[in-house]
Picture 1: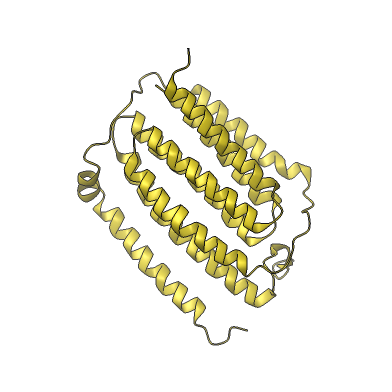
Picture 2: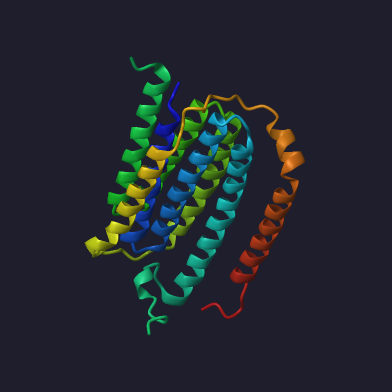
Amino acid sequence: MIPFIWFTYLTIIIFSLGIVNILIKRDGINLVVGVELIVNAALINFISGSAYILNNNGAVYGLLVLITAVLETVMLLVLLLVYFDHYGSLDFSRIRNLRG
Amino acid sequence: MIDLDELTFIIISSLMISDIILILYSKKLIHTIIFLFFFLLMVASIFIVINSVFLALAELFIYNGGIVVLLTLGASIATDTFEDSKVKLYILLVPAIILLLLSIMAIKFNFSTISQYSYQNLGMSILSSYVFLFFIVAIVSIATALSVVYLLSKEDRT
């Protein structure tokens, strides 16, 4: 039987690498990919917790996270499309309107 | 002695982490999306290892079938090439601190009472205890669809 703490360590590593991906990449698609990595880390944590803590609350929450992640990705991609229409690029470093 | 479950977990998780490292080092967007596809396959297989086949299928259909295709369409509009990002090294302290704090929390947590569980009555649980949450998710889905239609059909898009 797989120890539960292995899942916890795996999700911690995936979560941290997702944050690294968001921090070091500058284009919008890689931002979405980083968010997907973080969401999948949460998903593995929910579902492994549900499998090991003897009830299915985590599985239901995992399903909800799965559905909500799709909606969030669709909205991010539409915002990227609008951003691309406005700036002609997906490079986020071109956003200078909010600088003081 | 390591048994077959643990060996499977080690192989899948090492493939998963190597996929993420390839995502971090890939220069082209399409390579990033291909590595993301394999990462999501590994996530689905780890769900099968812990006996939750329904969620593995949902992951395959939704992520590998839907989101990867959406990201490919999104990458096809990115015509510009990106330079190597100049990252200040102290920014990487943030994920390092998060990794450290979460590892300490995982070490402190008591895992001794945990035993393995097979999924039963998942549908009953969804339709009895969590109907309200699914109702909220349905409303959010409709709001997302309307927002997408509104954002993409504005007349003053240039």
